Image (cartoon, rainbow, N blue to C red; front, side):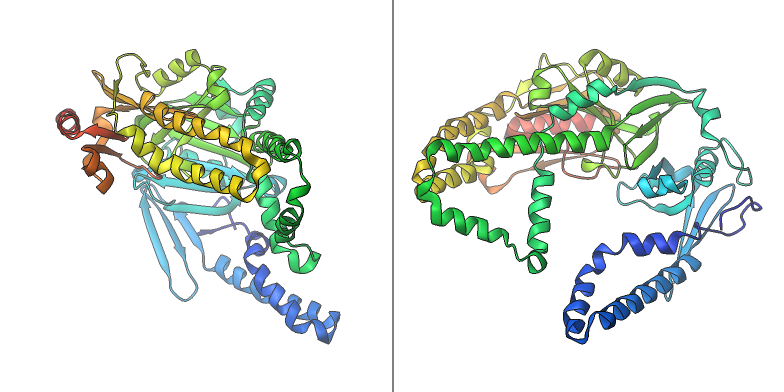
Length: 478
């Protein structure tokens, strides 16, 4: 159990860990539970309940053994984590290698004053050090020790004392949160609901496929206006889904500055806290998403040496912000501001390649829909927009080699603006697909330390000679 023990003494996660592991792992055991119910149902409910109880007790025992065999100790120089039942694993991580420290709490952990500590190194992959269930005081103690602000044998560190010395850089107000949610379209929860219904069809007797069969049987009974109501309904559901998702993720989003580190706190049910060392920041990314971008709002992310658990491997430091605030935050992060003037466009061959990659399939699906359901012919009006999107792909894809950084812009509905200082570039690669060879163009691939995901500042479809010049110029400035 975590306590005020001597320096280097072995510590364990919180004793409640086995119970939490059993609950959080229940989802992966649903297929096994369903199989047990199906196999023993004919023998009576008591037998089923007994079998499920024995299985849960066995899983709890295994989780308890895992907790018992998982220990960690913190010294002046390293964090050592031992784990494993039959095969023992030891990870010794020098404190100087730990780049970023995150403290996360889901709703249940907040109720029990527990936390999850995530420590990232410069490898850019998965977390190298993860303590899944410790007390909140212990999580804060680990953070200040790793940051070199306390000794390993120091007691718990209270957040208010530290927070009083922090400078508030950005806070998402409730009004801005609602506006951000209203402008965030997502069908995630709609897709999740359909997936749940499909999974539970054996118990509810309802099959999602029955809906499509019914539509096939009665498609002649629908008027054009009724068919157009379905996309409208999906749009409304998408707006509601986006609102809920935004509130859960960005509620009370705060960014503060303290001793050369950024501290980000966010979340409604699951509360996450991340510490970002400014010298470890590698790159800035500004995203202007569709309607939000048209209204002058964007979100700002940075990439650090340690990567991130966020989608795309980056840390969002301002989810809903205007250009003046972006310039101020970029200056705090020691990054130059993005300049839209003077960007060079990519080759004209980018247009047909963009259509073949992203527009050909939607066009074919629309044509197929009209062939299958003739009253849906108004959807063909979307085809010119698909072609127009391919044209806009080239218009909004540009780059510039500034005095101190590479700046790249790309995207139509979501316009991305990358700012990458030259000294943070790790590798430059020229890449040509078969289609690019036919069009006589190439892509300049740019890699940075700690990158995860595919959202990189690559420059697509430059003429081969220009791509070579850009690659050599970048290599010369690294």
